[in-house]
Image 1 (cartoon, rainbow, N blue to C red):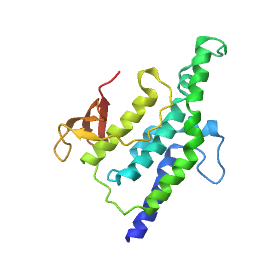
Image 2 (image 1 turned 90 degrees about the vertical axis):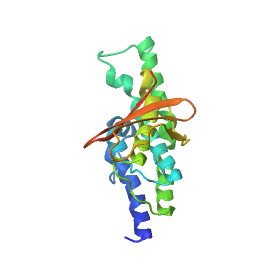
Image 3 (image 1 turned 60 degrees about the horizontal axis):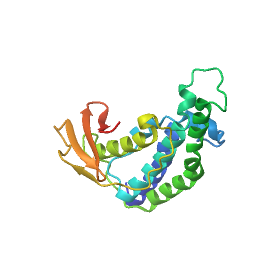
Image 4 (image 1 turned 45 degrees about the vertical axis):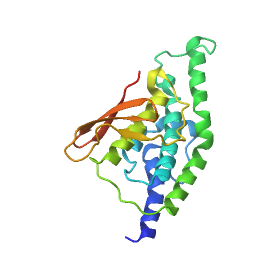
Length: 207
């Protein structure tokens, strides 16, 4: 495959990665609320290729964080078991506040996706690294950080990932290594475990 063909394939992949997890990616867009509620962010995360150039990875993770924020903004809706919630109650205010957390991501999603696709087209071709690689473990860690910011400690969306924080490995992942540790950013400690058939699973040392 030529370098141009690889870049075209990468650009198409950026869109298909997102559409795998969202409803309404066909010719007729679905309503925004239906799309956000239908997003399967775990499936989207599994499709993010390892080995992308850093700026392209940052852009793809930014789009992922938009989706994650919008999806988890519906968390109180998913968790609610009551037939109705008074708007003025604590639960009602909390639910509305959570829904509002997804608004910034919703507003920027189309632009972020377009920029990611454009960068994929312009970027040099890259080799997708295998599931056991350190690059794949790094993607798992970065996804876990985004998931934790949006859904950890009972949070409900609102975290948009614009910075590619440095990852420092204490034990480096690779062939034959099934457990590794490291830090992301200045204080974010993590560990990753490799599961055959699934890939790397990251756990952050936070609430």
